[in-house]
Image (tube, rainbow, N blue to C red; front, side, top):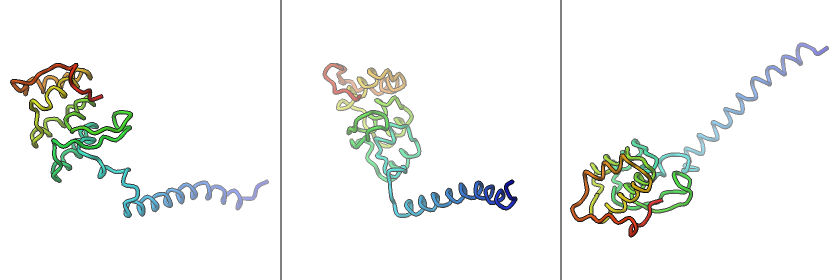
Length: 156
């Protein structure tokens, strides 16, 4: 027969050890977060291109509010929406990732849709069957914007 004291100790250990483990993990997480290690686990490292690709309205607004250029090409890390890392503009990322949510915010904050990028955006939206973006682009088509998708670089 098992004594009552031994059984009570096992029950206490079964309850206390997971809680103690959680406290230790939480403390380690807080210390590393305070030291900024690793920064890859939070949104502070997102580029405007990445925020647009994943349709993060809050991060897009924060980055634009902090002065990010809505026309500047920047890094799109591998694994967010495609397998390889690449560089593209926020509008291109949103178009290729079929995320039209942040597009209006980008345009309102100065992202250009003109002869220099219209064909890339249009052909990217066509290739990805991004009908929302196609409707958005149709209303902003520059007069002389050629649309020959065979001569345009692919987004994806």
